[in-house]
Length: 260
Image (cartoon, rainbow, N blue to C red; front, side):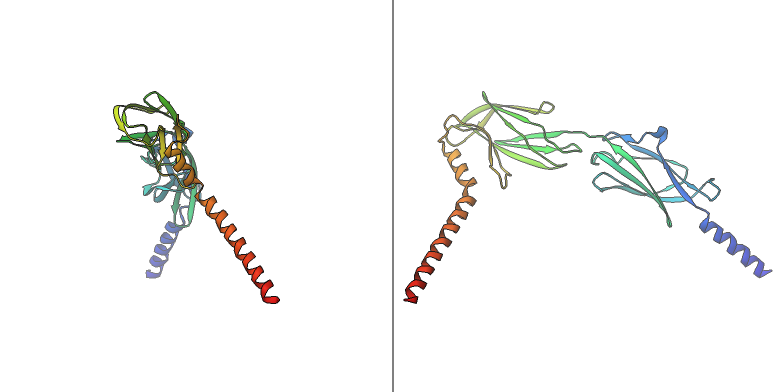
């Protein structure tokens, strides 16, 4: 009798371990396109070996197009799940992964692109921050008084760049716009060098930091300093080569004298 019960319990336990044969992920109305800020809705279902839906707890992981984990959660089979995860997600193809023991399946969804920037002006420092979920490449028009210049930042998600506004000493009306986002300030005190008017890229590295400048005086101090700064590496390289050539010439001359 005991052996029969043990065999029966073992059979029940074994069948409970292998009863789940597959996992399915589906989006209501086959809608797998979501806009930034929209909740993602889907249903995960476990099936047994006869293809019938069964109950169970399933681990799900949601990642965006940059493989950033947006959510990790255990949910119930056959229940519709809604998660608010798209706000900080990158645009493009995301993945829902569902797992139970050795069973695993994935489903794809798409998050639409939303380009946007935040403008800040603190004194003479203008800051642009990418607050969208895709690369920010919009041309920005910067108007200082009556002088207009442009900038074309290339910012990844969450990245920022700062520009120092310059002009001959005085107070200026500032208008900045990329066609979608605008910033207007009156009576902004600016102090520059020479007659240059425009914006200097404060975070430039390996490229000219003086961009978007309108300068009536091309011999202005700031233009000259910028030119020298940008050519420093070239000058050092040329001087190094020139110095090496002199050393080689001296060494050859010394050898000729020593060989006499």
